[in-house]
Each structure stands twice: as structure tokens, then as C-alpha cells.
Length: 180
Ligand SMILES: C[S@@+](CC[C@H](N)C(=O)[O-])C[C@H]1O[C@@H](n2cnc3c(N)ncnc32)[C@H](O)[C@@H]1O
Image (cartoon, rainbow, N blue to C red; front, side, top):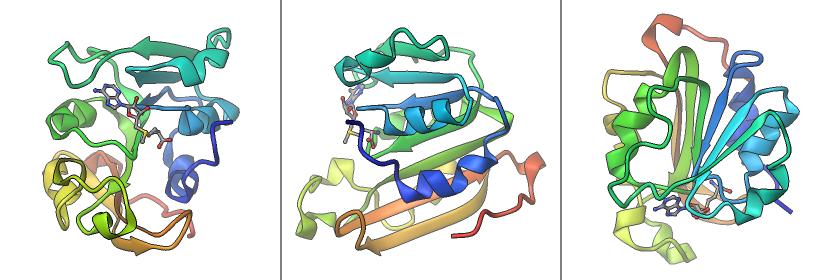
């Protein structure tokens, strides 16, 4: 059971161009990649442990890449561009330039993870895994244009402090913002 996709990803999924390839980075059980497979996108799933997406191995539209993203290995999808780059509940700051570069000209980056202050709700509580206030905006720099950004406390799916962003290539703006 992959679990339900994050509401943030569901809301902004329509910004991924129809049929465009999607990258689900640090995919875990692949709940977001599965969402995009269901929407008719080819999806590349990357994680250091693919056991929770092994059931997708026979799906022609699913590419599974086992890779450690933090051990200094090469970026696992060199030269590839995606209509959707999705990262949730995972943070490794050095990857940000590669993530931005992986967003196609008509693509979108959808990112959501935990932020400073989350320790009072549980894990993650280590500062290495928590974004500082507004940090995602800074990490993106000028390469992508922000469509939506939130930074604060949420009650669902469980109480947490999160930061989330949706960004597109500047040439694509303005986009129609999907309703909340
Ligand atoms: C909290 S889970 C999030 C999974 C998924 N993105 C989601 O939101 O459902 C974090 C994921 O990051 C992966 N991960 C952690 N460190 C990693 C690394 N160094 N290289 C690749 N994947 C890693 C874990 O295996 C795990 O699947």
C-alpha cells in the first residue's frame, strides 16, 4: 500500500504537460509516481531502496532506478529532462541544481518536505532534514519561477511543519493556478 499522494502534488499535477515524463525522486513506495502513471505519464522512480515499488517492474511506463543520491555517485538520470519533477519528504540540498536542471522547458517542479519547527511534532527533527524559513525559494534561485509557495504548520495528513513549492521555467509563466 503506497499511501495516498500528498494533496499538494495532487493539486498541481495538472501543470505537468499531458504525457510528459515524470521523475519521482526518493520515491519510497512511489505514491506520487503511481499517481502520474495513473494519469498516463511515463515515470522514473529513483530511490536507494526500490523494494516498495518492485511491483511496478513489469509496467512499461515505469522505469526503476536504484541509486544512492548522497554517496557522491553520479546523478542517476544524466541529461534527462522531465515534465514533472516531484520530491516529497526528502531533502539533500546538494541535489538542488540537478533537480532544477531536470525540469524541462515546459515542465514543473513540485516539492514538499519538512521545515524548521517540525521537531515538536516528531520526526524528522534533525536540522539537516529540515528546511529553514523560506529556504526552498532561495535554493531555486532565479532558474525557475515560483507558482505557489507555502511554509508553515499543517494539520493533515498529520500535524507537521512543512514547506512546499511549485515552480516552472520562467518562459512558461503565467500559468493557470489549480484551485486549492
Ligand atoms: C520519507 S521517505 C519519502 C518517500 C516518498 N517521497 C513519499 O513522500 O512518500 C524518504 C525516501 O528517501 C529515500 N532516501 C533516503 N536517503 C536516500 C539516499 N541517500 N539515496 C536515495 N534515496 C534515499 C528513502 O529510501 C525513502 O524512500
